[in-house]
Image (tube, rainbow, N blue to C red; front, side, top):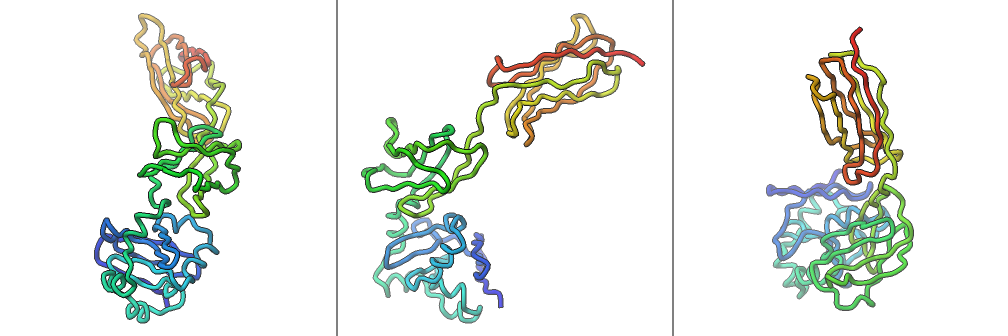
Length: 292
């Protein structure tokens, strides 16, 4: 039978492993966030970080006798999520206040003292630098061990202008790859590498176009990177009724930006395409508007 805990308030879904159920849980109070708590090791794993664990790590976490999941304002031993029926689960739920009283423990303290839960942002600054920002000051960097799956961390330091931020110097990151970051063997989040800046651009266009019919200009940056802003500058002849156009288009996943337009009179358009953030990287062309 599928095991499922449903609560009437706004819910958050945890995707567990194949052998585990899908749980919908109510967000708990701000002081005691929902997630998994190991009351012996005093380790907290948030819902979001649980999603990043490997299948084996999820199973190990759920099977530990001292791991409990906070579901709204109720607590349940985590292994019930793997083996128990709906009826057993509902009988095994303990109100948070009662659980903390029986075990002489405060789950909010565990959550608030788990450094992994204090990570507020992880981002790639360039191909060899990652920035990890915490919500509080880092007092002892020597006690922190950072690791990135599939990528060597060469050096760790605090940011000169911000003692809540740690700078990780890494080996060369792969373009567009998503990496998972661990702190003291606990997953704290992930980041995606910033693509290398394009170094060239090529304008693709017809030499002639028929007045009143649309044509498509293409600008190819030579690398498969989406989201790079490209400016199309279309300069119609002076005194012509044809229109000048300046428009910015983002590249697609193939690294190509496209713009479709037409003109209503004879004449020659001078076309310039360039990286919006780097005017020096550009290409030129011309289109002659003709009649049949």
